[in-house]
Image 1 (cartoon, rainbow, N blue to C red):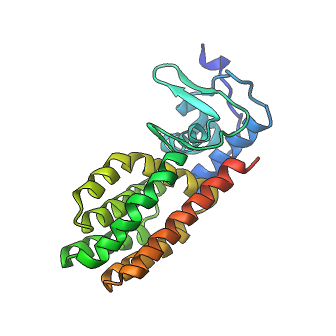
Image 2: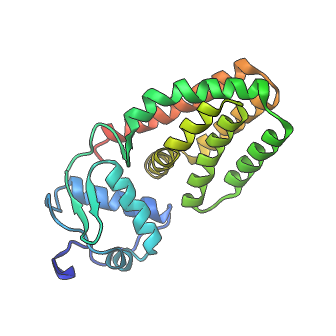
Length: 234
């Protein structure tokens, strides 16, 4: 298929609310309004970037969230195609789904936080607090997502349980993609920063009960955001 056969939005510069959020909402609206047919190919990253007046990295971020909602599929060497006019009932996050994470994470990360409160070392606290500080100062959404994944991995490491550490490492990429989408669609970044600080403070104080509650609160808030996203019509 030639580039001229691919759907592009025309000249529609995006206000930076962030830019990726603007592009994502514009694409989602066009897809759900059936302005783009099932099976239609979107323009290339370069073409979409030019039309929206943003960088290609912004386009990639927006397209990953469209794919997570099951609206599009990107095929290596072929491009990105519309596969549904409605979001799926769960986010698609590479090898895992948001339902997979929702069912598994409470059994891994809540006890990991509990054990971390009991077992954390000074080095653990320094690493975790450094990540929190970096997240609070980070302006780039993609970089924040990677720091977020590192934060959760560091909690697992501080637990002193190698199984928790290994499992969180295995799901780390899916967690990052989910974080990217809930930040983009549901504005979860600022609340997550606050919740991360609460988890850290409980671990630093060696308050196992508070660490358990803080991690449970955080995971519940993330799941609420995911549920809102997949139910949303626009």
